[in-house]
Every structure is written in C-alpha cells, then in structure tokens.
Length: 255
Image 1 (cartoon, rainbow, N blue to C red):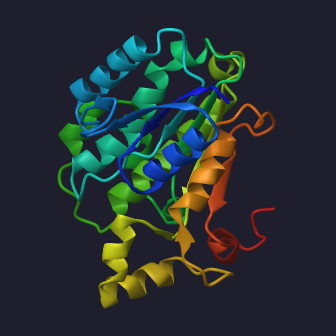
Image 2: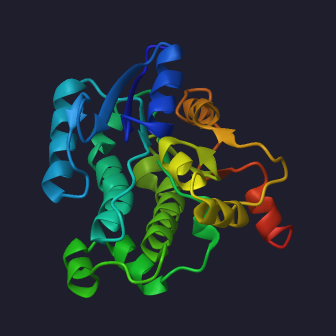
Image 3: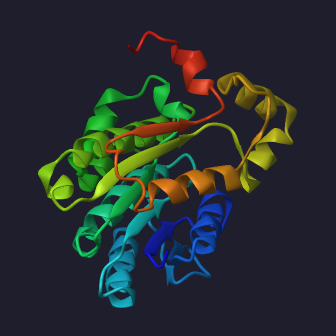
C-alpha cells in the first residue's frame, strides 16, 4: 500500500508480527526497539524517547502514515510504567506533526485484557497527568503483583479515549484506537505456559469462548487493518482481541 508505518517493540512477539503483516501489504516499516532496528533506544528513559522522535523525523521527513506501539516489559519496577505508558504516549504525541502530514493517519496503541482488573486510581491519574518526576518521587519498585502493569494499560486506554475525540487529533484526521490482546502465544507467554503454576494462573485470568491459543500473526493482521486507510470509521475504540475473554468477564452489563 506504500504507506510508512512506525512499530515499537518490533523485534519480537506482537511487534514482529505486525511488521510482517504491514510489509506483506507493501508498507515501509520503521522498526523501534532496544537494538537491531531502524531506531534503537530504551523507551524507559526520557533521553531514549527523545532519540526515537528525533531519528524518526530524520528517517521520514515527509511524514508517517501510522504508528503502532507494542513496546512493553520493564519488570516490577518504575521502568514498567515508563515503557508501557510514557513509551506509548510520549512517542505518539511527539510524532503528531509527522502524522498530520499523511492523508490517512492512524495510531494503534496497546492496552490489555488486564485493564479490566481493579487499578490504583491515584497511579492512573498520575500517569495521565504526565508528571514523570512526581511518579518517581511517589513510587518505587512494585509491591503488589501486576498493579503497575494494570495501571499502565488502564492509563493508556484512557489516554486513547480522550485523545481520539480531541480536535488536535481528530481535526487532522488522525484515527486513534487500541488493541487489548488476551492470552497470545509469544516468546514471553510461552515461558509462562511452560511453568505449571503460571500456566494455571494465565488460563484462569483469560477464560475463552474458544479454547485455542491465539497466535501473534492474528494480532498482526488486526493491527494492519487498524493502521490502514480502510479503517475510516473506528475512532477511540478498544478492540478486545481475546477469543471472548472480555465478553465472559463483563457479560452484557456494560450496555
């Protein structure tokens, strides 16, 4: 399709699958990850995020058509919050001028089925405020399992909903949506599924209507559509790509 797309977390898993899907459509993909990519930087660090934006302006001075953010990880420390939230929002915000040059700009961010779990409301609001200095002052290493991950993914989803309908983005035709993957077969989840206790927990947290382990390639195809010019209707939507997990957990009570 001859579009230019940026994919973070491009070296493995969902990011790698998204790059393959976009390139199969004829798109130029600018990969971002820690190493071995078009842009190599640590998104947990402010300087790393600035370097990504600077390099992408050099590599695509005529604009970019899509940004897909898969960078995650970080462990049970503040780096998890930095990568998952600031490594998404700061990058997308910084690329706004390049996206605005496209005739059909698209942004696809990553949240998670885990965003349905109760979150630390104060932490989510602090992330949304963008005050990384205050975050460092108030929080240290994670003490409650999964709470940093849940908070980061919840904050990304809320940022997406707010930005998608804001004139700054919408007036430029920039469609912003999110994917919330369920249990997907990736190198990271394969390690967890190989450990009986972790596998039991993962399966309990991700009940499915269809008992099939989803493939990264399936998510890549979905990301390709959301990042495409054909995706003209969806604005501010979170697509739960989870084989029914969200429907099982929430039922029809959201209507």
